[in-house]
Image (cartoon, rainbow, N blue to C red; front, side):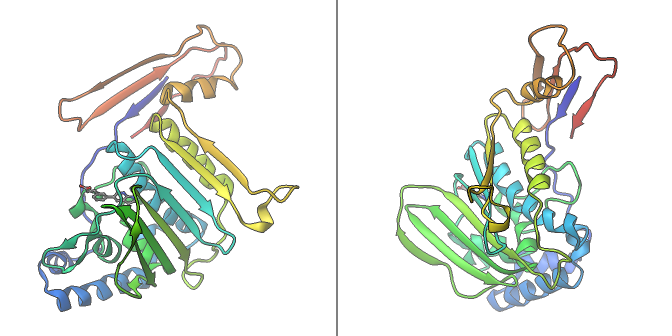
Length: 304
Ligand code: 0RA
C-alpha cells in the first residue's frame, strides 16, 4: 500500500534567524535593508550547516533541491509543468521552469525588484508566495537566498511581463541592477549557480542522487515533467552524448505502485486501486494507491 499525505504549507520560520533580522527585513529603509542583506548572507556563509545541514555532498545536493523546490511549488500552484535541470560542463547547475517567473516589480519599502529580495533576503520567499515550502526531509525550504549566499556566482533569468530580465550575483550580492532585456512571449525562471568550493568539501554532483530524487518528485507531482541532463564532459557516454533522463507520470503515485510492482513478481489484480480526498481549502490532501502482488513482503511508502 502506498499513501501520500499532501505537502502542508506552513511557515515555521527559520530557527537560526533572530527576531531582529525578521523585523529589519520588512521595515527597513533602502540603506537599512542593504545592511540587513549583508548581515543575513554573512550569517549563512559563516554557518552554512545551520541552513543546509552540512557542507558535504549532502549539503551540496540540498542546494539543487532548494532551487528545484521553488519550481515544484510553481508547478503545484498550477502554473508550471516542466522543470529542466542541467549539470553544466563548468560545474554549475541550471534549473529552468516554465512557471510565471519570479516577480520583477519593485517591492514597496525595499525599493528593489522582488526577484532581488527573494535572492538576497533570508527566507524572503514566503512574502511573495513562494515560501513556506512543504517538505519531507526537513531541511529544505530555507530559501534560494541561501543557495545564492553559498555560490561564487548565481545568474537569474526571468521571462515575464513580456520581457526577459537578468541579474547576476557574486557570493549572494548583486553585481549590478536587474536588466530588462528583449521582448518575449514566454514565461518562466532560470537559475544557474556555481556552488562555492571554499564552502563545500566537494562540488561534484551525483547524477544518481539527483535523478533518484527527481523521479520521486515526478511520481508525487502528477503530470510534472522533470528532466536531468549531465553536460559534464567526463560523464558523457561512449559517443560523447550527455546523459539525460526525463520523468513524467500522468498517473502520479498509481504509476509509482506500478513501478514498484514491476520488480516484485506477479500482480494479483491488473489495475492499481487509487483514490484521493481533499478538504475544501485544499490545505490537506490525501492520496492512496495500492496493488497486491504475489510476494510475501508488504511494502508501505508514505510521503508527508
Ligand atoms: C512568487 C510569486 C510568483 C512567482 C514566484 C514566486 C516564483 C518563484 C520561483 C522560483 C523558481 N521558479 C519560480 N517561479 C515563480 C508569482 C506572483 C504572480 O505572478 O502573481
